[in-house]
Amino acid sequence: MTTSTDKTWSPLFKEPVSADFRDFHECLDQDKRIALHDVAGSRVHADMLARAGIISPADNEAIQGGLAAIAREMREGTFAWKKELEDVHMNVEQRLTDLVGDAGKRLHTARSRNDQNATDIRLYARDELDALAGEIKVLIASFVDLAEQQAATIMPGFTHLQVAQPITFGHHLMAYAEMFLRDLERVGQARSRLNVSPLGAAALAGSGYPIDPEYSAQALGFADVCHNSLDAVSDRDYICDIANAGALIMVHLSRFCEEVIMWCTPMFDFIEVGDQFCTGSSIMPQKRNPDLAELVRGKAARVIGNLSFAVTLNKNLPLAFNKDQQECKPPLTDTLETTRGAVSVVAQMIRTIKVHKDKMLAAADKGYSTATDLADYLVRAGLPFRDAHHAVAAIVGLARERGLGTLSQLALADMRRFASVIGDDVYQVLTVEGSVASRNHTGGTAPGQVHRQIARVRAMLARPSIHL
Image (cartoon, rainbow, N blue to C red):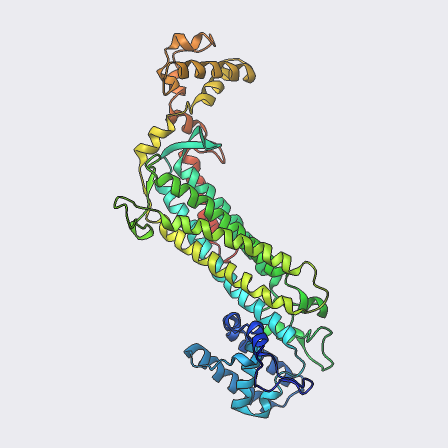
């Protein structure tokens, strides 16, 4: 075991910190993400201290100038991070003291790294959620734009990955728009729950100084203050909220990407993805792999794992702060950054999709996809639905025995063997175009209903609030 030659930060400790423990302990790679938020929170804290008469106006002026200089160094990439100072908070405080002297040492009055860190993480997460919400709206718009182009394009709808009924490709795409609208709502809810200020809780019990937590909360844009100091420094529920929202976003992206992968195979050949989102093979020159879709599908597993990580981390922690909670940052930052990146790049991919309408239409006519329409025809002719269902099953069985690809290839006499009410007009019912057009109600797949869905979603996206 090696030991650090640096001085311990408190005279209580007689032995220096083990260098191995220091390396294991420090979290600067994560903390750099919240560094500017730490400076912003410190500036507000110093203002609050001066307003309350806890520090002098002169000290506050010096602190504000020093923190402004530190923020510039961070933006320019010249801030000198010191690993031995453990975290962003001590790095900022040490640099501030170097710049302004004793005034910098007064900044931490009435504050702990516990409430300081909790505040910084919330500020970081809030900004990242706002950015993620913006990317989700762009993604939804990409689905909507493609759906509008393909509102009348007929394709097979599936259950159990077997051909079920004809639908429109626009309708299929709008199903994903609905999923991501729910995700946008979840992001907004997670933001709302985290948007309370822990600043003022100090280590766990609050402060003995005449502080003004409400002022700090308002200055930092929080909707409220935390009303229990113990909960303020130990709460990481919002990280689980964010991990949950991120996991579901990635699940939805993964489902879409799985379909993109299938649709690009020669067996489907429904679509083609732009070259900029595909790769080739080192040995097979004909290969054109939709690797972006595969990579998003893989990254979904990692984000789902972050949810398990975040929840498990919190399951047995006593109140209040525990060092375990340092480990909440990686699942938070990875979830936000991975999810945001995936949402952005999938939106770009969607805009390159070329649709093979003839292949979709041909596939929709296979697998006896209008069998339900024939059953509905029989019900309208007076048969109970269950009897109609059995009759159509027998008709499908006959078509299968004869090797016919569609029910419309059967002679009228053959169909009437199983249901005498069938007339010459049955062939109009057996077209995929007629099947799609008949589903002209709210939520249905008819082209007119797809356009209604598109108008509704576009109106929602046009709302001033970034969240729904």
